[in-house]
Length: 292
Ligand SMILES: [Zn+2]
Image 1 (spheres, protein in one colour):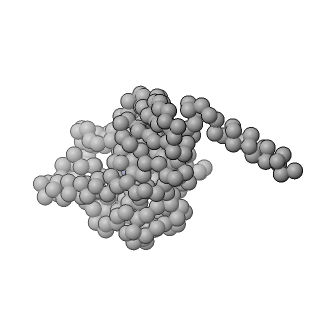
Image 2: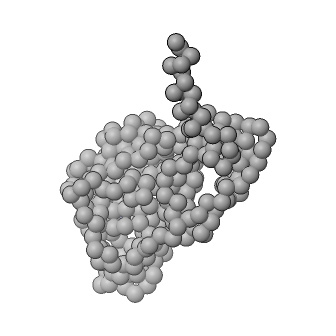
Image 3: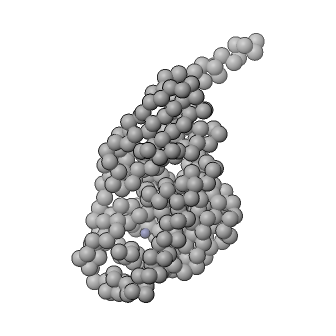
């Protein structure tokens, strides 16, 4: 009897899509400073997050993020297909960020000269522009995996004090691995940008995962994909190196949402076994200072 066979599916659908607006949204990710949260909204809904209109895929996929200094609460306003409206108050947990003191760096690495400063600003503006893109494709929706396995040598959000002066917090995760180790796409993407010689980040690659989500790969030894190419989750895209201002081979991996940097460790989950985190507050010094 086909009617009875459909019953479990029907019950499942009722459970998965209850009628109450409070539970109509499905979220995945960390509601925490540095977190990226993907969600599914009921079909026909429109959303605003902290006053910004959100893009939704045809299936209702959307994405939001909380920066390192996000306030304890954020507002997600919705309007459903039936015209009903409301606001979800999202509680954002505080992140725990370490302080890294690195002394004894060569002064010109901490305070670049005027010519280098101009170059740093130009490159920074170019990267910022790319990362504000808003591709109409929810390529992020299948989740993120680690692009490479290795010892985590630098964590997101740590405040860097270089030769006694406070600098920008670290905007990504550093993963130490041997030169030449393949780097794989952590999620489906389109290659947004590749450069061979940026001042700080050396050989640099940026992937576009749609709806304002981008990931960046720095200090590479080699880049294997062309701008505009589509890459599938798990595909090799580059090789680990020490280009730019790095003293040892490692990958600087960053993820951002409309330029707001989030914590790749929160997005990709724990590094698979066998790769430990460093002790907190240990000086790393495997990466040069960020621009002032
Ligand atoms: Zn880094």
